[in-house]
Image (cartoon, rainbow, N blue to C red; front, side):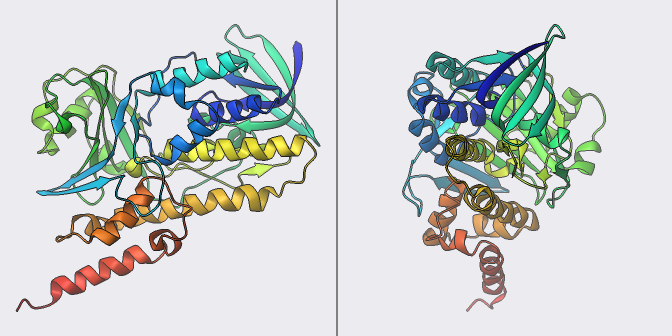
Length: 414
């Protein structure tokens, strides 16, 4: 069995891992990435938020992404019955990026991985973590390559950016049930041969079928489009047949999109993720930190996944860098409390989406522009800006405004 040593080992070469690695190599830290998959590879989570653009820019990964000519995302559209709610990221409470991208993740993640390798970060693809042990300021991670060969990697710190693999939560038994409802999703990509011309064909759209069931439509610049349904697990499982048959049948419930997609071939066999919301006991421990989907996964309704991944990946790298340079780090205050603040804001929005309260705010007419631009800042990923009352008071403000809408609608018309 071979053995090697690094300062920091990163598990996973997705956006969280690449942002972490880029920051560390920029600061002369000896870093290595191990990745179970072979890139490029398909993964879900194709819609970004403006907040994550700051992270790519800070660590020098923005230029390589600009070169890919991904579809630009300037906002998000929500449809329910005959009502349309458009959010424009340039009209938001918090200053920051006004646009981001809609990306085929296989191309997006691969571009990031190629760039960090160019910067000098080694990535061992098709290497699976099978065990990790921690002993004070050192760890031993056992990895197995595609041929079954084992290797030990010694590191002063481990950052788990393994996404849905949830490596350290599994090995260290950190998983706990999510407090969010049990929802599942079914999704694929299609060659969008019926895509409308102009802006309509580029818009990311959430077609709200009912309070708990919705369809995402995410067009890419390469002519393909990601489509997927989300709903209660029991509802998704009530459809019979193969995943392709189920998704084809479910498309019939979308009055807006059925005609566009009914005769389109699926580029991938539709995939199903059951009960996708996840949580953990803790976000860090002695010698490690969890980032991205290795920590919490909420719900795809507001496309928060990549932004939480890059926010946590960058912060974990900064704090780990300080720690191995013998600087004091308060992981609870500087990392866990901060990340949980953002997670709790989005959790409130997910919760109130499925109670129907947030949907009232989206689809009530006439619109309130002031409320809308504050919600827009949240949807853009700026969930740490406490000057925004829809962040600072997230636990009660949506319910309060929804109640005011109910009272207004109950008032007799004069």
